[in-house]
Image 1 (cartoon, rainbow, N blue to C red):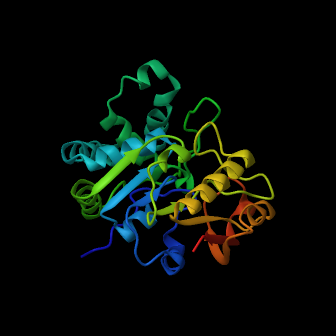
Image 2 (cartoon, rainbow, N blue to C red):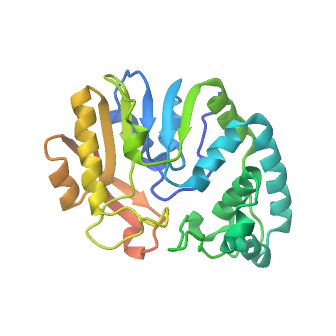
Length: 276
């Protein structure tokens, strides 16, 4: 059976370090939690039967919900087929600018919003998802004449997986997403990364700052005390090493190609932190 792959390109995506994540993951666990699911690379690699996935990005979670729905996702694909034919610089900005008028944007169906999110992800520069302070998508066009917005077989596998297993999809704060976690559950945190310099964190208009990193470490510790298996990925920074000094810190090398700051691209040191 073919392995499921992420349906969107997402900053900090985990495809190229999957082998390392698998290496450090617990061999057995009950329910899986991923509070910063993003493109879902690790989720789709593990394919747990019981999972709670969450992301603060409402547009991304809408895509998950639509793909999970058999009828909705087929309608989404029809819209995307049309978008691929119409793809051009002018058409891209027409679709991108839909969120400039909130009264009109809010009238769009969840199916239309889903198709828009996937199209913009595939047709924008470098697959970057970024919004401004008004929560408006502001990544420029990638200047390519043709765009492939989806792999039909892969999307079908994702839809079947989400429908045929006990997968809860949430859209909220990471702390709320793990409140139901119990002993022997596995939680994987993949937050917007900390940095010793100013780098890209604008997955939502609220960003993710150092106070959030500190709060996340406190949640990590609470889950540890519950008897959960907890894993976290981040950059190898002074703050992260200090926050998790009492746990196992595995330093790895990773390639990063999506960053608004060119210095954040290339091979960099990351850490995989575990409490087991």
